[in-house]
Image (tube, rainbow, N blue to C red; front, side, top):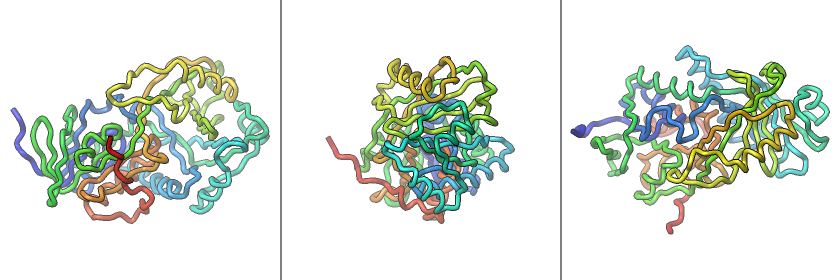
Length: 380
């Protein structure tokens, strides 16, 4: 038996971190919200599961630094509202080889522009402060004390729980089959019935184009199966967050890692591995070649990390230049799109707030002008 047509102020499609944050902020403001997830809540098919995600302001582009500063305030607001501790400050290093494609000057410029405290360290200073690293003299680093860790799965569950507390209706295992803007809102079609909404927030990540293509608004996306690996150091105390930071290695190939967090292991991964897939084709089986590559890098740069003990996969949907997409479709402005390009978890509470403001107020005081919807993907 199907449900009859129901009305909502906003329908949210996709309940990963960004969609869950949007549902929370919308419901908190009193909107009638129905949020739909095609899989079970907390599923492992996207990029919002597992335990830890990096939070930081240390970007080499000012638009991300500005939004990250706002996000820290939104994280604090979320923790106050829910009573949950979701962030753990560790401090963080961005390690940049001099001959690589990234410039440490971009980081110092963007951080300085937005008054984020930071330090520039040479290789000797890195090795002295953090002897766990083995880096060459050609490496310099940006240190930011505000860098830390967000608990991924707990954050998403918290956002969903408190969206419901504020009155949102969340339905899992409810795929959306079509979005039909008609000038007076959007008709949302599911197997269980039809909804009518003033606005739709589409936060479906790798699945977004299934709904955008019929609207002539497909966004160029490249999907990859990524993987993270946990290592077991012989001396876990040396990798405690009081002694070892979150770190990012910015070079032709980028890597990142964490101190111990909830267990005596350290987590590391390559970012943007090139392991192309689609949501239909991904296997959940990690790549032995990528694991061997990571073992080699960690063995050279963080030699005390120890042997690997498990590897977990996730899925990235990358936009051109990994730019966020955050705003309305040009031809169908009642459909708002949120795509995080594999690095948006740290921004999730701010992105949810911005989406709520765009949906309910028609605009936002946050400067997200750099994150407009790109031109549709070419057909064929």
